Image (cartoon, rainbow over all chains, first blue to last red; front, side, top):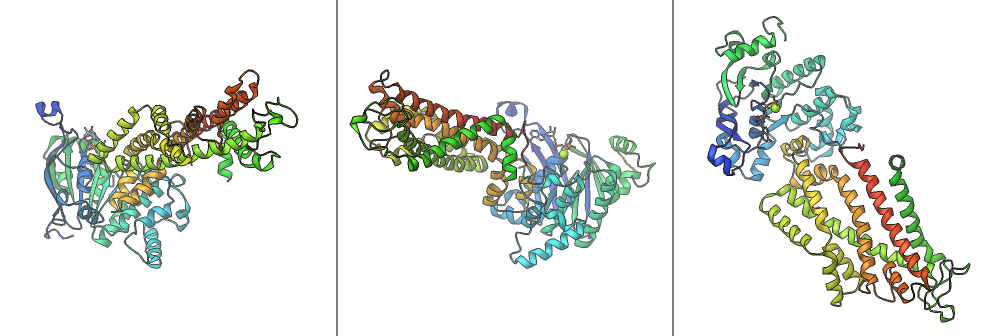
Length: 267
Length: 278
Ligand SMILES: Nc1ncnc2c1ncn2[C@@H]1O[C@H](COP(=O)(O)OP(=O)(O)OP(=O)(O)O)[C@@H](O)[C@H]1O
Ligand SMILES: [Mg+2]
C-alpha cells in the first residue's frame, strides 16, 4: 500500500440526480440519489462503501466508471477529470477502471461463449500467440478450467460466471476495479474463495478496489477504509478497524449490530 | 441443424407456416421448369378452358396454362417481396441502431423522418409514383422498400434502447471496445428475435401490396406476370372463367397466411418474455 502517494481516484462533492430538467425539477429542485459525496482512493487501497439498499452506492459506481453523468461535482482519475474527457479519451481511460457487477449472469453476453467474452478483453494484444498465453494464465489465476471456454454463460455456475467477470476485469491490468456487490449472489464457500482471490490480486498487481456492499462483516475482511452511506450521503468514513471498533454514528452502530461482527470473528 | 428441427417442432403454427411456404417456394422455383407449357405463349384455340387433366387449373383468355402462369407469377411476386423486404430491413436496422445507440439529435431527426414517412398512406403514395410511369420491377421494389423500413427502424431502436442498458453492454463499454464492435457483437445479436418476426410479417404485407399494385395494372407489367396481374386477368369474365380469379386469389391468401403463421410461431418462440431461445 502506498498511503502517502497521491490518490488514484478523487471524488469531490458528487451529486447525482436521475431527473433530467422538466418543470417539476425547476420548482422543487432535483431529487438527488447522491448528495455531496467526497472521497479518494489511493493506489493499492481497498475502499469500501457500505449502505442499505437504495442509498446510492451503485449510482456512485456508475459515475466513476463514466456511465452516469453527475449533476455536479468532479471525479478525477489518474489526474484526469473523467467527465471532461471526449469520447476517445474516456475510452482510453476506461481500460484502467473495470467494473464487476452483482448480477454475474447479466454481465455476460448470452450470445457469446466464455472464450469469446474473455478474449475480447484482450483486444489490446494483437499477437494471437501472446493473447492465447495471456488468456490461459489469466484463467488459471482465477481458478477456471480451460474447458469452460467453449460454454455459453447459461451453461456456467454462478461462481464460474463471477470468476469469468473478474477475469475479464483483470485482463486489461486496470488500476482500479469497482466491485458492486460482487459476492452477494454467491453461496458462502464461493464467497470465501472469491474474497481470497480478490485479495491475492490486490497484492500481485497493486490494484485498488472500490468494494460496494451492504454487508459489513464481508467488507471488513479486505478493506482498508470504509465509508458508511445512507440516503445519498456519506455519514461516516474511516479506517476499517476504527469504524468497526469505534463507530461515532448511531446508524453505523446499528449496521455493526446487524452484521454480528463482534460475535463472529471472520464474518 | 438439429436445433432448427427442434425449433420447428416446438410450435404448431410455425410448422404449418413453414410447410405452406416451402411448398409455394418449390412450386414457384421448380414448377416452371417441369411444366410442358410456357407461361406466355398464346394458344387462342385453347382460350378459357376449364380445369382438366391437361390444364389442371384451366387456361386464360389467351389459352395460356393457368398453373404454369401461377408458378411463374410466384417467382415474380416472391422475388419482389423478398428483395423489398431485404432492403427495408437493412435500412430499418441501420437507422434503428444509429438512432437507439447514438441517440441525441441524430435520434430526434431520424425518428421525425420515420413519423413523417409513416404519416404517408403507403399504398396511395406508391400508387401515385407507379401511376406516374415509374413501373420497372426495380423501381417497384425500391418504392416498396422506401416505404416499409420505418416499422423495422422503430422496433430496432426500442430494442437497442433496452439492450444498451444491459450490464453486459456496460461491461463491454468499460473494456474500451469500439462502438462498432459493441453494436454488432453485443447489441445486434441480442435483438434479432423481434427483428426476425417483423421481417417475416413484412414479407407477407409486401406480397399483399405488390399484388394490389399489379391487380390495378400498376405493378409488374406484361410480359411479366405476378399473382396480382393474374388476379386482374380474371376480371375479364369472373363468372364464366371463375378459375382464374379463384386460384390466383387462393394462392395469394395462402402465401400471406403462411408467412403470418411463421411470424406468429417465431414470436412465440423468440419473445424474450414468454419463451426461451438458446
Ligand atoms: N435508472 C434510475 N432511474 C431513476 N432512479 C434511479 C435509477 N437508478 C437508481 N435510482 C434511484 O437512485 C437511488 C439510489 O440507487 P442506487 O442503485 O444507487 O442504490 P444502491 O445503494 O446501489 O442500492 P442497492 O443496494 O439496492 O443496489 C434509489 O433511490 C433509486 O431508486
Ligand atoms: Mg446497487
